Image (cartoon, rainbow, N blue to C red):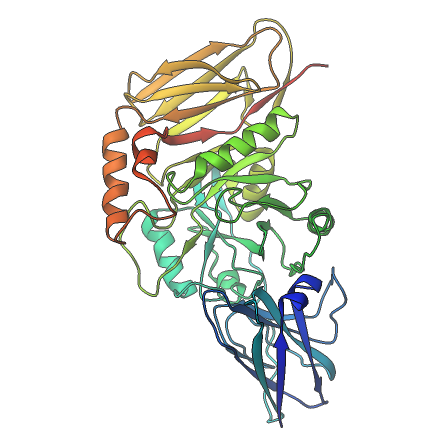
Length: 473
């Protein structure tokens, strides 16, 4: 059975609700649905695509999600035994389903949209979703990972298998795959997770005015946010289900334009440092200075190409999040992320940076008292500079004189909210700029509307620690 629906979508529709629904009556016995979207795609006309089954409710829905491909695909299928990447296979209840169109960009005169739906009732098995595995690698220590990347389950060209190879090539211990508005990458990553490389459950809540990562949940989280206050609804949903919420790349070109929710983490470093990360770092610093306690994490936001790429400054694990874990497991990674037990560095072999106050590690809090001293240990940054930072800004600067270096600083009395540290490139700056420029030149010009002055004037961070908080009471 074939159904063809034509609609004219306008900017008035977009203003009323950026999600446009096309109902589809699915009879009992249907085992496969095929959907094709046709519209005049252009720079000013981009329409996303997805589907819900009858369990969908108005936002926030707890269920009904059957897939999302954004603007990456113009067709998909959902069946009892399999589905297009980004879409959920399984039982197909009778009733009213909905094709959902995301009105991301609509031209001034609107757009003609045609949606073709085919229903099939051929006999098919009903296959279950893969179950989560719980791999553990024993041993406490520093473990490295990337907390933001994508496969062809959303808008990357590369398969989960290729991304897995890239993570092994980078020498990572853990990896979070946060495909846009979908969780179906777990068809591969649940059974593939192992003590050699632990996969962390992730999903990137993606809207036109802000992105956030959800970590540690099997359940899909409704992304259909339409009001600034919906950020608080998002945080409540994630925390009620036991997950973590992280605000992504709060900088150009997609800053966080919702109200700021009760986030556990903030992605203060996304992709190479030169990708405007000084903006997101400054916003994190402002939030810390206001009294918020938010763990810093980093992620490459790498969209895996179809083929495995060689190592370089613009690939997976640039930057790398390094966490102190009692063991390598997903639960340990999530706990360390929330607690801030680690730092972000430029890559898998980037400088090591840890700070402490007595026995108190990064992410912890100490009670204020006169004579507090913070200590840092740095490896792999000889000739660079360590900045000590509190709520007032940079309050100390020290030259890193050796490859394995330790330094300390006396905190002012009274201490100002927290203490954290950054490694600023000095001796390493020429080759870091050269490496980035060479990689960028392969694309023909500097990316992200960067200017040459950014390469000459902007401080380059090589590593950023999480804070140690100072309690005044």
